[in-house]
Length: 629
Image 1 (cartoon, rainbow, N blue to C red):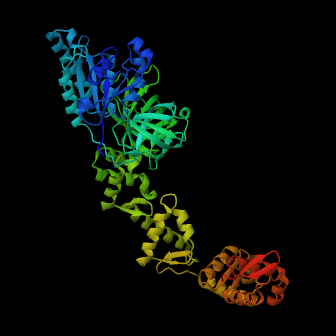
Image 2 (image 1 turned 90 degrees about the vertical axis):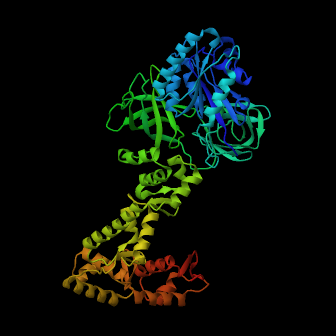
């Protein structure tokens, strides 16, 4: 499937955009009676451009009046080529400049300037306006690559030259990848009898088929695609860069507004915080200030947002700067998306830029180097930089395409080939993060052994918990496994220690350990409590706890409860006695008490322990032998 091309109009009110589209396509894009009565485009209009392009193409006619610039911005979403219309009898005007500035901010690099109404001026005036237009457009864009074609929508003069210029510009425009995540910002939603809810928009990426299920964010609705149309033509499948009407089943039109986004597979989510690179172009009347409240236009969405800059400095006219946009309502975005910022009041375009991070953390300023690499470097470098942003937390495979802007299949392929990253479970990590985890595990154990010299090992859970703030559990487990394979650590059941580490006891502590062992052997299945044992052995409770833990780690004793420890041999004898006593018929506690010769104080904890480890199973009538053991 090939991708389509969207041509968008731009220019000042009354410069003839709609009449020029009608002359090129034969379609009246002023849909509303009010528009036709006033001779003024209020909302977005659409027309097929096959006659101009000879292929999959469409034109978006947007309003030029200042009062309807937000509609213009919604219509400009997904535009590949800008058809800038300038009236030859007036020359560039305020909305001309604003639309060119918006095109620059939205990354529209291909364009054609149509000097319309050439029939109203003489050749000398036409050339003067041509020079003025070229100078103005060049100043705003930073280049003079767009051809300027004189034309008359009224007489048809110059239309063939204009068609050729549009065709050439489209041939050099960006190419969209069909093997990508599907996304279509919605610019209209309405109900049609027999079809149900219909949403329209320009498909930004990927493809969608009849019968597939889609999501609608930010309200997180789901629906099934009943049918698809491109300029009135039924389709089974629609790719990127096309004007699409989508009939949906399972959602009411009243719940879908302009600004919603139709999405296919992928870990898309609604966001309230975006990391951005802000640009204030030369034509802006204002700088963008830290803490400023602005109108953010992204796709067909318009939300209020608060600007946060790197050093609380303003981004000056003609400059770029890094920052964060805290949005007042959720918005859907992908890294690489272009946006426009307008001043809160009075409403005027002041800047824009690109999204470079989704939901950045509080310490986002430290990530600016990676943000720059993601936006400006090669795809091979960008994917590694995106992994680097996540550090030891890992970049989920399902997020790679969203946080790089690279088509999904291509992004995964680049990571697979990169020697700088590795995949652990469902996420990607930089090799430096892997090395960092290894050093962190070893350092954690070194400090733990020094702090708790009487312990032969640390619990695995405590190691995981200690590193969980910086590293994912999956990565920690993988690294521990590698360290164990390399012989640098020893994992024994729930414990872990550095290779060669042994519990360090002083001579007096060794003597206390021997006395503790003797006391537990003598007590058999009726041991004293830890407090009583501390008195018997003559040590404080802290030392006693360490000695008990050491004997548990050595498998010499068993922890029945926090207050009851018995020797391993006593536990095994109790287990055998319970097995002999228990049967398929429920046995009451009294029979176990007789078999073991214990009081209730020690019997009940021991029976509950046997339940926990699966030797017995408690029923209302008594305990039975667990047949699975």
